[in-house]
Length: 162
Ligand SMILES: [Cu+2]
Image 1 (cartoon, rainbow, N blue to C red):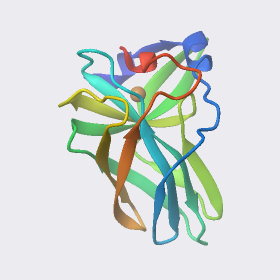
Image 2 (image 1 turned 45 degrees about the horizontal axis):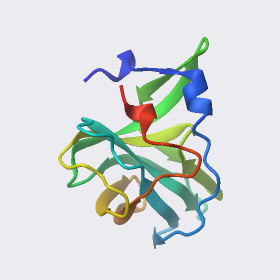
Image 3 (image 1 turned 30 degrees about the vertical axis):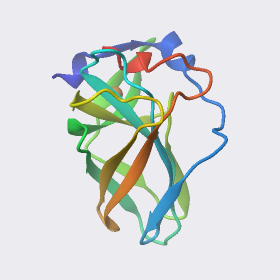
């Protein structure tokens, strides 16, 4: 699947802003505090899905990077970055997501970065939980639990219906 050919209309992206979720869960590994991994329910027969992390805080003095991720529910996970090209938002696969020291990075709906679940092996339904393993350059590997939920202000995971 060629990520560079995927297109997303800017208006659709802007419509996906999410209000703060009322509850959450999290974990930490080394200097990283990983708050509330979540995923929207997948569309019927959708080949791909998305996963998000409300925030990853690097409380250390050294930079870290998210290098890759994997999950039992999809063939592979891609790190995606939204890039504005003229008036069109395009999704590009990113080699890594930077986690600068003493900072917080969000992988949010409608934000710059997200994780794409390529080749879903099962439908993601509201209230499902699944494992996601995150591989960090410095902090190492951490497996988190992703909560499937419909973010407020969105009807579905339409931004990944491409
Ligand atoms: Cu994507």
